[in-house]
Length: 283
Image 1 (tube, rainbow, N blue to C red):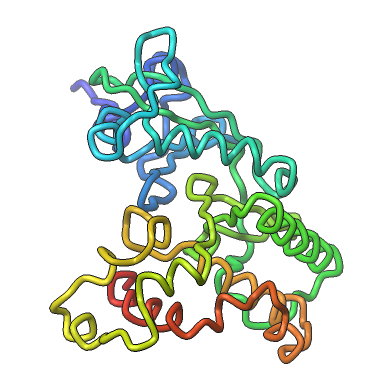
Image 2 (image 1 turned 180 degrees about the horizontal axis):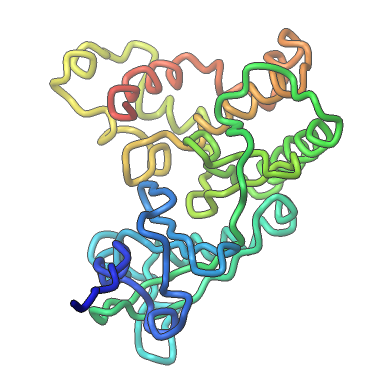
């Protein structure tokens, strides 16, 4: 009797880049480690590296969002506006929070069906705590110090670049097995939309009843960049998570933190209404 070797689930999806498909690295575990709105993550055979696979091809992204036309590879493939921005943001953030990002190497390749994608190899992180839900002050001194540095460096990045990472989602910001802060999701840096742009779209006497009743979609009327392509207000959610980390994770005085001008957008009345209306979308 011939015993057939079971094929990994990931191999059946036909999205492996050829260079990895032809190597032992393609011997992935049977199931993926995780999936977000943009990426799926699979473990590789060495158990120290994961492969991040985009859910959509570059051609799909170009069809939806277009291409800048400024960046084309030697193979003749264009890079979408989204990918170009993400690669630029990833490079820019390195000077601020690079110490908290696992070693990551983006690379371009075709999948097994000939679709052009931007993959990434990333050092695997063994998670001991998901910081999205942080309910009490961290106990270990080195973890406290790591979180203090992370909060400080993110604030600097927001101040200088206007960028804030997406760490409001499950498993995006964690403590690794050494108790150090690691940012796992590196594909959705956002820019905080100024209050002034929101006020231009929604005046003080704006009628919210049509949105509350579901007759109008508020996502179609928010300023550009306020929500991502999944309809989530990533920047505002991350800002709220950062505030929570200061209060609960670091044990800082709540009254002092909420008075901090850095968190002023969270107290803007129209923004608060928008977040409330968007919660069903995020569920």
